Image 1: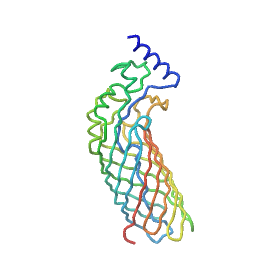
Image 2: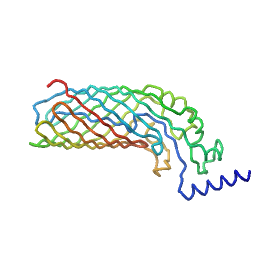
Image 3: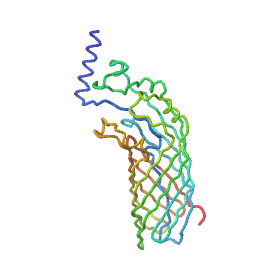
Image 4: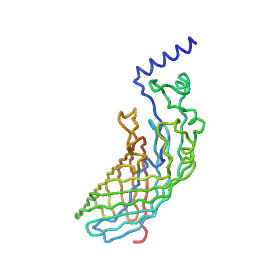
Length: 285
């Protein structure tokens, strides 16, 4: 009893000195943080008014509190893009297949406090972390989805500014990770999202420069996650020190040579981050 009391005291002092906060667990869609990849659109200066593409991308990222879980996704898509007057539009239908790695929680401090620590205790794991540990491991997931956007455009001889862009993406999830979330009791984590739908709505702007055989550019996008289950949650996040609300931001660099467009995209979202490496191939002319 004395030994356990000393251990609890030492751990309490350690976490107090290191500024430890009560960790929280968030199990939501694997597409959180995996915002739409880059979609090619012919320049206004080009002769092409419409084009169609086969797109492929790999996404690698981290999810959950402190990036404790790993996410890996392969995307493939058929997409179209059009120039219509002072506007441009794009859309795509795709398939995604990936793996979500549910990491075990370090239960050393949790075991000292017991199965249901009080809300005032400084814990290192969420309530009922053992339930998550019993089902931890790699979880297959997939999704079918639609994405699209429209923007205004201001072209010059050697550059193009795509401004006031609006984009959206809609994903329908399937697989083991969805079943994992559906089977978790509410007490196992701070937030568990069991819906198979994941949607985003955002804004973007893009600046491009023309080369002899193609173009290069930079794109910035930011937006929110659709649905009441990702907004107005009334959950206070101990890490960010404000109420939880899901959103995303990404930065993209791309380069087009003839029919090929390669890109690298950095993705940041609520409780998730990662990057895309993708290639778009223009079909036909």
